[in-house]
Image (tube, rainbow, N blue to C red):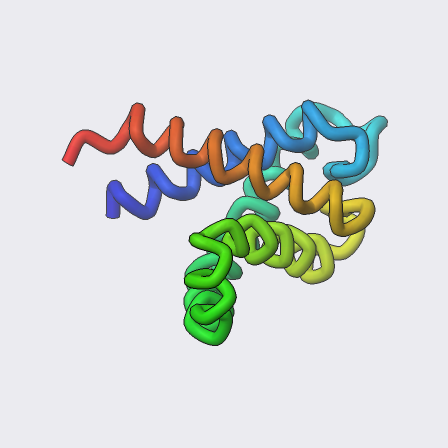
Length: 123
């Protein structure tokens, strides 16, 4: 149970950093209150976690030849696609403008999520 909570917090922190750093990724209404934005961020982090749990393994398995051919660099494209799928599912709560913004956002989310998970996961 603790591992799930750590992954949720890591996803929320990583998405918050991506929203903060990139103009092409937006979270809800800009004029919304801080509490409303925090709730929206938690909802988007939950959606992103479910997308990564359910869809990402299937996509990785189907793209295994490309992953091997590119020595794993195709995982950046997979991360971008998961971020764009999250944007599509979340609707107006979370929006990613274009593929290249999603690639850069996926890179940021991956790095920050890895760093937060490494800092908090003491198993």
